[in-house]
Image (tube, rainbow, N blue to C red; front, side, top):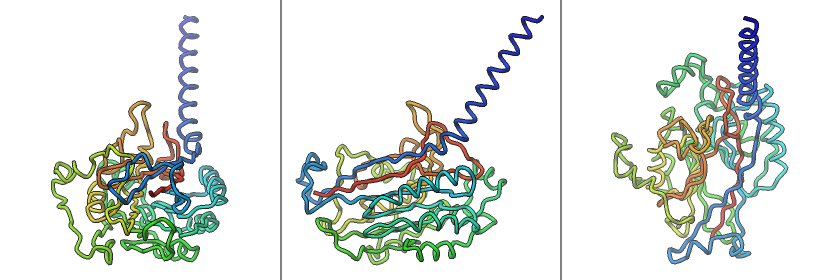
Length: 349
């Protein structure tokens, strides 16, 4: 009897220890295990150029690569995670960038806006900082809404954030917030065509307006029908991986870069069809829980899980999806999914 008791006791202690380690890893270690991911995007303006030419060693002095910092899904708070994240961001702000893109879900509550501003005010970029909003910037979700949202996506929530106040604060700090609008960089960058930044509002909460986003760039955009899109030829064509690790500009005189929070497949298809060359997105948190050898279990939107994070060259556009730096306050865990900031070098022939 004593031997059985000892065995059960050892099993119980082992189980308790294992659960403690798992909890510590998922809730305390991995969420603050920040990393800087480095990506290269190669752009060409002439179809006859070989993709082999697009490497750092063969880029001319007149077309030095653009250094872009991509931040997403900060979910900045005042807790332990928030303090660690603020410290990480302050280190990033010491570096030099040509462009900075922020793809939404910066804060979840209005009272955290000053905390956000204290962090982002230190960032500087030669050609500007541009941002779009995500659902959390617009709404302060209730726990019950978070739970229901896991089973059926909602397009709105009961508690609205003061996104106008957030927009004004960001713009006073030198960050241009693009809400279904586009802007052309004022300064000509040597070796590059003119660059236009397209900011698309979050499709997950029905705020996306492709036509408005493209106004002045393409006043008669071709909009794909949404009904049956995921089973259509348009879907297959959009997400056909290119064999080349370079992208040819659709208009050699202009490079169109789109920012969107959620990499919704329908939104991406419409942007690619109407001139977007490169799209930066977030939202997915990289799946938040990943399985070694398989990757993300979920993407949190209509895009396939294999595209939940990373850099992808499709036939008509380049997509970069960030795993983000934070998590929602009702799901403060990560498994095998490091939070990331991405430094992207953009090369052109």
